[in-house]
Image (cartoon, rainbow, N blue to C red; front, side, top):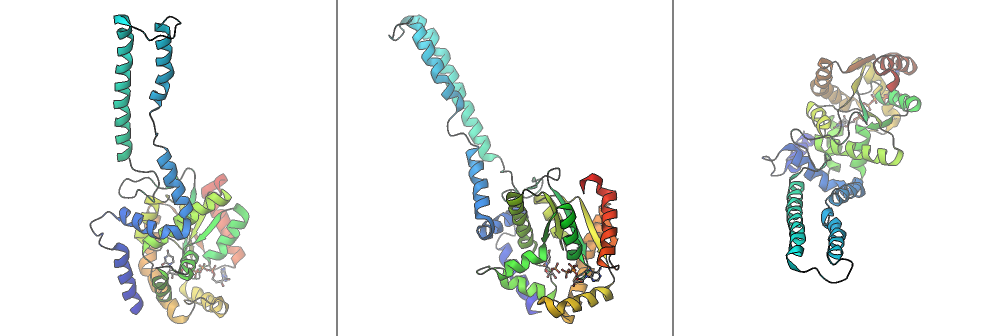
Length: 331
Ligand SMILES: Nc1ncnc2c1ncn2[C@@H]1O[C@H](COP(=O)(O)OP(=O)(O)OP(=O)(O)O)[C@@H](O)[C@H]1O
Ligand SMILES: O=c1ccn([C@@H]2O[C@H](COP(=O)(O)O)[C@@H](O)[C@H]2O)c(=O)[nH]1
């Protein structure tokens, strides 16, 4: 109860006085706040390069100079004296007109560039914005399933065999929770203990930054996003501003088996939520909040469902077979 109250307070803090702003602006503000902790270098590079895209001086004026000099010397018929008389005026006016037209065009270009939206999700957002990563360039598979269904276990095998980059939303949140100075530490801690969903701005930003870091450091562009999206708003926001997902890999497992696995894992995991009370709350959140996400993707025919009750190797064999069927060579 206390945790969900603090969650709501933090949500209000995240939203601030921005209720009339588009969600994308709120995300942008939040990312600007905590981006320095994750990838200051990346965002400043992005901003610097977009600034570089605006020309400092019009290229046509640079090109005009030698042309004018050539004309000037030809008017003097090889001598270094300035041209005189009406004949010279005829040669002079076209250049004045060209420079005036060019300057006008340049001002128009600059003004239009000021109005243009920047190109990454961290600076766009809102309806009709362009995702940070194109799905033709970057492959995203969401990996879903109840708590303890075996998502992480299967992801590790897919990384080993197909060179995916594995990003667990829960791991990223736990790392952020433990990061000294994080303003979201307590909120994340409370949410995790109670099986609640952390406000999407935090998780979407963590994932986007982790994807950028992975692409920059290893060049890998195939991602398994594990344990995300757990709520419809996350799904819609991620696909809008970060990258549309290719498919959802869904591990189907009965609660009794998941509970058994989690209690067993809890003996050594040190996780604050691997206990009977948290597990019960996590199951409830999964059924009420996360299953509608799976249903949504199922309606779009984007779900690959795998029975997760077999041994880890058995589940993996089934995973491979089903993914190969859908992705073929792209796996
Ligand atoms: N097929 C399986 N059969 C038996 N045990 C399994 C199987 N898959 C995973 N486990 C075990 O169950 C526990 C939970 O697995 P795992 O961490 O992969 O699940 P998860 O879905 O990622 O969980 P969470 O959502 O809590 O992060 C682990 O201790 C793991 O070793
Ligand atoms: O998108 C997400 C993913 C996770 N959480 C919170 O983290 C815990 C643990 O997640 P695991 O995937 O089991 O590691 C989960 O119960 C949520 O509280 C989240 O808020 N949003």
